[in-house]
Image (tube, rainbow, N blue to C red; front, top):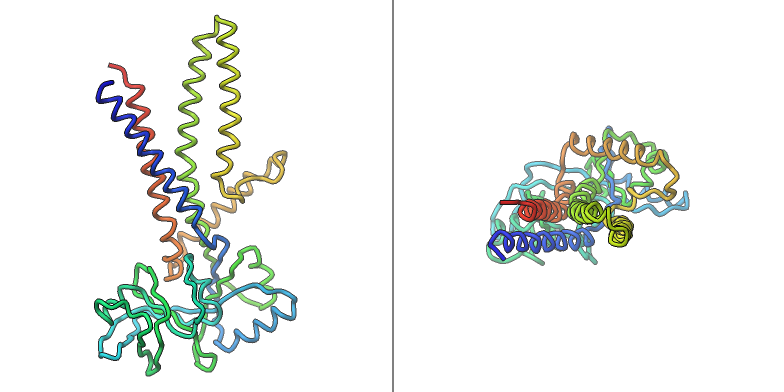
Length: 323
């Protein structure tokens, strides 16, 4: 076997490795239904308790958090070190702001990103230490893998802070939630968009592989067209392969891309229209720290899918190359 064949097999192994890695990371992608709204008119921190009562009276328990983002804020360590960061005061479960598990039992402290913790505390990670912000002490309860300086803490309901964002745990409840609380959102950001894009990219390698193997079987059927028995066997093999791949590929599509009734021919145009609208809104809307952290888990499987596609297509070209 010449070098070209060995290279092609190596590329096939690389394509399989990257595809498996991308699928594994996608399966760990949490909280895809979260949605954030930017409000035209902000709410005081004290509004959170009133909204909780409204939810209870409606017999519902939709988890949500109110928050805002304050840019260029100074926080200090007790040793006198200063760090410039964006500060996010929040009312509610701050876990909803991020697309990775925080496992916080105590949310009374502050969350800061690792780079800011390094600026304030040097080699120490800062967990359990205290910072000073607006002459108040906050104990560090967790570290964030955020690409930009960030500090998140629970807003005091007595503070005169205007909160202009709402994040819901389930985007399907957004319209009833808006009506119950008389909100007027400017735009919404669905964190599932990046996962859907990564899912589509990881869907391409098995789709390309299916087309490639299907074309090989189709060529076998064509070559055996004058031989009834081999033609029948090859045709049945091709038919079985197509059905097997069809049902296997369904496992890699997001649930919202699969219709509940295949006779519903309007499903795909409607789903594409919703996806296009959400994507354009997500691209055009300003990005806040929770939005940026929501993108991070989808970045690696996205690149894994790209590398898998490139490796698979290159291997196919090498196998089909003729001297």
